[in-house]
Image (tube, rainbow, N blue to C red; front, side):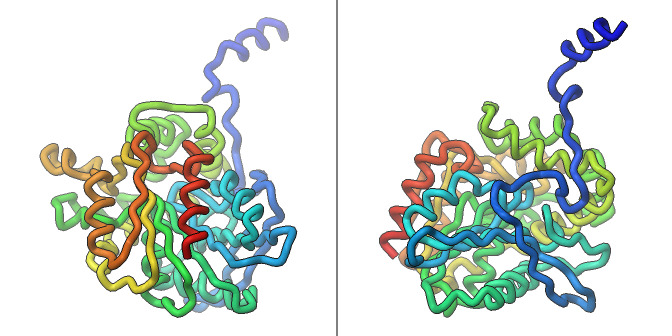
Length: 331
């Protein structure tokens, strides 16, 4: 009987046989580096931000701060951190409040201004010693990085945006608004299968590679654990923030030297699932969005990856890291 059961288990698809479950603060998932915690008071409650802070083996030449996207965590920068360290940079990668290993408050007014203020408080606490600070933001982290650069331009030597979202105003283009409750209902349906399907279709132009598995399962694992509702609620609040706070109108106000790294196969657009067919067809056109964003930002550098999608740092780390280091060296 045991032999038969084992044989049947072996025949199950991977999605059914090996679905990891993590805690509400991603307990059980290893980042590969020591995770530290910053305690702050925000909106009348004590909160914690998890973060990585890794020093190079020699005296640092600068600090690179890596900001994750909505469906990602600090750990997603795993393949980018070693080359930055080797080049002499101190690397700091926080998990924002509401995400990954950080606190997920039940009541919190999410705004990019608030997340930027939280990140600013963390960096002040870490005492960077006057080193030049380079801010790198991916996806939603790109929206946050723009807000940070607009609010604290004096703190930054450079800004790098990796397939940032918010380069178009989805609501103004015809994507219907939805309530936080509706976002939450959708988040509760999240599974590994839905994550994989969405990322393959939207992020990676219909292809799937083993390199993507870890990060899809990292995200899915939070929905499999006992913190499912807290995770879903935080993600719903974040979706509302992203949809209602586009940064496209303020790109022209950026004063920090800026580079855009744009995978041309990306088609990410928040709320696409509710958009009318004629609107849906126009959304997430990253070849066009990258060019228009670069044109709006004075002196911007545009780096295009013809065969890459939403996460070039995951899809082709060697190509992305070389491009990022080249830009940082020029700053």
